[in-house]
Length: 237
Image (tube, rainbow, N blue to C red; front, side, top):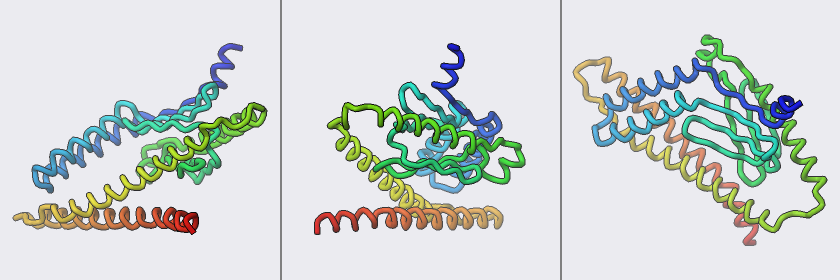
């Protein structure tokens, strides 16, 4: 009976070891590209960030954990950890190997579990998005039922919680825009002058990839900011 209670109150999923090896290999390749095509003053910090991300994914891996007793969903991607209260989750959507979690006043969180690309399929990475999505939806339903049975009313800190969630969402949007601007600036710093035509072609491809992705991030950030400006203007009116 005790073991059943422990299983029902705590569930976790961890990405397979092959994805951790893949993250380490891709990170090492990205570090080599940065040190080769960027000037040294830019290559070193970029290489440090890429190495930290790759090592974090290799050591800590991607993990999804449901703590029903605490009413918390914990999402970990390497060194980054997100904690979401179950009662703040408004919807759970599963699209093939992608799980999207909508939060009240806090935007959406998406993750792939665990298959993301054809390479992952070739590596026989399991697709467990359906299991994770079903478990999260069931836990959210239980948390909402428990909340509905609580007759003590809404706590006074609910408004502050919503405000803090909106501020975190605004910070995430701003960071996304900064990443786009950094990618655009890095595109102009890629070394294109090489005696080897193959290296020159690779430099051009890298510059184009950075420029296009940076422009996409900037435009996407501006698109995310438009609804907020409209809602603020409507509130002021």
